[in-house]
Each structure stands twice: as C-alpha cells, then as structure tokens.
Length: 472
Ligand code: SF4
View 1: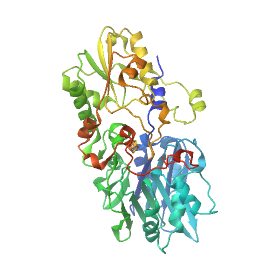
View 2: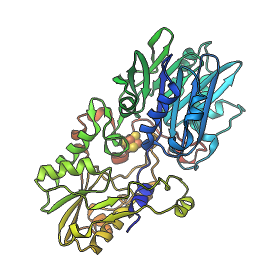
View 3: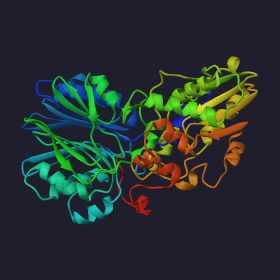
View 4: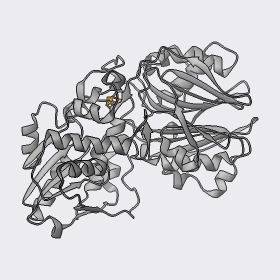
C-alpha cells in the first residue's frame, strides 16, 4: 500500500478558489450556495464562507474546513436573505489562517460590501501602499481589492467598482454583493473562469458550470473578460467593461484544475481531456497491453489514449474513496502528521504486462517516481508514461499555487533525463500545439505561460516576495 494520493495532492499544482453568487428573492439562497460550493470543492478545500443579505443586514458564516464541516442545517437557517455569495479557498505560500477566509466583508458608514475572489492581483503591493494606513485584518490581496473599491470615486458601489477595477492587474473573477445588489466582474484577460446561469427566473454566477448544474440552474453564458455585471431589483444589467477584452483563458483549467463535467468556452472539459489523450497517442504511440490513469485527473485522457490506439483501458491503481481529506492543510509539517491515504496497485492485473500510465502533468516528479517504483515491485514488464500537457517549467502568477521554478522536474532537464530519474521505460509529453488543438481555442486567446514562459499580463518577478497571498 502506498500513499500516492497524498503525494499527488502535495505535488500537484494546487486548485485555486471557487466562487458563487445568487440573487433570488423567495429562494433559500444560503442552501443553494451551500450546494454550489460543495460542487466547487475541488477548487479549494481549506476554508469556506457564505455571506447573505436580506436587503438590510448582511450575515456571514466563514470557517476553516470543507463545505460539509463548516455548514450545517442549523447555521444555514440563520443566513436569511435573498442575495448570497460564497467562497471555497485554497491558500498559497502564507498558510491557512482564519483571517484570510472569504468572502471578505467591509462595512463603512452603514454601507456593506462583500467579495469572493478567484485569481491573483499581481500589483496588490502597489495598491496597498496607496491605501496608506487603512486598517486590514488579513494578508490577502482580496482585502486590498475590496478597500481599493471602497476608496474609489462614486456614490454607488457600481460606480466604485467601475472606477477601481482598471487599477487591478492580474487575474480576478469576482462575485460581490452589497445589501441590495449582486455584482460579478472578471479581468480583461478572462484568465480565471466565471459563468452565468438562470434559476427560476433569477441569476446565479459561478466559477464553473458544474455548480450551475448542481443547483438546477441553466447555463446562459460566460461573464466576458473585462465585463462588469449587476443584478438587482430591476434585473440583470451589464454596467460596462473595465478595458477592451483581450482573452487569455488559463489552459491549465482544461488540463487539471476544472471538473471534467464543466464547460468553458463551449468545450466540455472531459472532451478536451479525451482529445488530449487521442492527440498524444498520435504524437507518441506505443505497443502495450493496457492503458491506465493515475486516478482521477488522468482518466478522461487515458480513455482517449486507449481508444486511439485500440488498447484496452483499465484500472491498475485503486483509491480508497472513503477516507476523509486529511491532507488538505498546506503546511508540510501538518501534512506529515496527517493520516495516510491508501492507494493500492492491483498486482494480478499488472504482473508481466506492458502498461501505459496516463497523467495530466508532472510537477516535481516525486509522485511519478513513486508510482513507477511500486508498479515495478508488482512485476510489471514495461511501464510507459504519457503526460497530457507539455513540461511545466514556469511558475503561475495568476492564481495557481506552483512551486519555485527550480523545483520543477522539467527545469533544466531533458525529457530523457526526466525519464531516467522517474525510472520509466518511455516518457512522452503532449506538445503545446497538441494541447491547444485539443482545447479547440485560438492560441492567442489562451494563457499557457507555465508551459511557454509567455506571460500575458506583466508580472513583477519579485512578486513572490510580496506580503500578499493570492486568492488563490
Ligand atoms: S500560467 Fe499556467 S496555470 Fe497559470 S493561468 Fe497561465 S496557463 Fe493557467
């Protein structure tokens, strides 16, 4: 028995945050938000929060832990109102503190504003200096964003948002609310996703369409890059655009971050992953007895790979699905104290076989090395690795927690050297052009910086020394 799942979670590029918002008089918005956040749990497992306004008062519940541990029937019943926003958080380098839990809420002179953020404001430090001695309780860039909005010109929140948003650099998909209105806006590059749905005549906004499906809402469209939306008593309206849209959607959402049943830019994530596997099979075919995935992120691609080469697809590594997520804490020493998660290879199936293992990406290489070691001990004849993304060589500054550049296995190593380190019989990565082809997006409309080093939004390379955490 090996602890590969735990290793994989530690090594993988971390999911980022999940956001949700709804304006629905007469509906139980706190419970709807709870179910939406539950379906977005993969985007952040360290804390969860919901804020609800009844038009006069805004109440919130925010705590560390999974959605199911933070909320219960009792506390959700106390969140009465008709506007709700919610957030699932994955913290980055600074660890996991209560003060950074979202939604961020500020109140000033009888006015209240709450915001849930997915992304990373790369100029948070500069913006923070402009706030002067404004009191803050967290180390989060979202709090800087909210105070910057509050200080911006305008009597109404809609005016303040329109005036402040052009100051923000980086990735931000925001769902916010005042006492009487719901807002949603997205950076002009549209790096992180944000979609709009309709439920019983009302509107909801979410990070992924899977959340809309879960609550029974119908997906209408994406919030366009740079678009600012308001929902209130008079219905839905587009307030305007922060800047001319220049779409650079995160390619890694398709590879790993999103749930396979979500749709981005008209493409079902599962189908993108399946096509990735098919294209990789053409780029790097192999003779084998069985194709398998590292559960669960490589499964769609492994199916595509197997289908393309006419090789049976099967499971060789079995995950215990009933163990709680004890590995969610970000700090290494806490993770080491966590209960080990079991992930068992099926010796009877593996013995004497030539097997292809398909996975979405390799970050540090330690997990894959461990997998190969374990499979070799089970008597595997040949082990061929196929990775459905190009080598990751560059850090992400737009809301995905990546290690330092030097920790990437692909940094300064050839594919052949990586293969040798991992101990596989062969190793091939999908080309960047192959991955873009699988996504059916125009290359110019995508961010692929972690593979190519071509950053669409200028980043100060000292950014990581900033005191601000991304969210996330
Ligand atoms: S650098 Fe990679 S993970 Fe970050 S936004 Fe761009 S494609 Fe996504």
